[in-house]
Image (cartoon, rainbow, N blue to C red; front, side):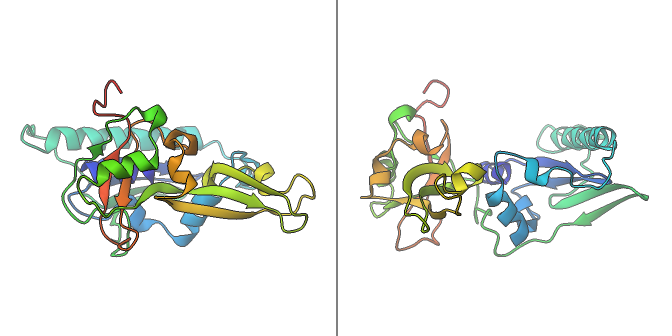
Length: 267
């Protein structure tokens, strides 16, 4: 999901691979056309992505009998990924070499089944409501000329206002838990946690083991205490891309911003 977003924003294609016990798949995604990875994500996939925990015991033992097919199947899928990547690199662009031609078009998927043996290629469905598509040519991010360690949402919005004076909120690209509370015993705690990194211990009250309720945000608004916190404290790494928006026009494309200073190699 995150790789798909970054590649689409940068206009770079990528080859995805995945396996389970009995089948694997390789898909080619490209900003020039075809469905992207997020086009195929269901509501259940999004729910699982935002509901995963740091401990994996809840998803262990997915099969009744452990299978030894993972290593062999993953090797096959990895080999196909490398082969397809070479075909794309050598067979496209101005320096294309004769004899190289990608087997998969953008938005196509190759599925390999072991039980029974079968291989087939299908076209992944394009979603008109997919939020990952930039809706235009790839754009270069505006770099925030301030050290990453101390950069806040206020700094990012100030840099973005050189382009659009009306921007007043920052999309951070993930669901941030800012508050947990227990209605059973009254326990309250301010936190800064990615929703996908919330542990079981953080989700239940340490006093009475009742489930916590959450306050979450996808945006940081100007004028709030959160806007004054360094963005590294909420989990945004160096050179991360975020978008500045007008809160009155959340459906507008916004302004793509890069954290980390004016020089991406030294700041």
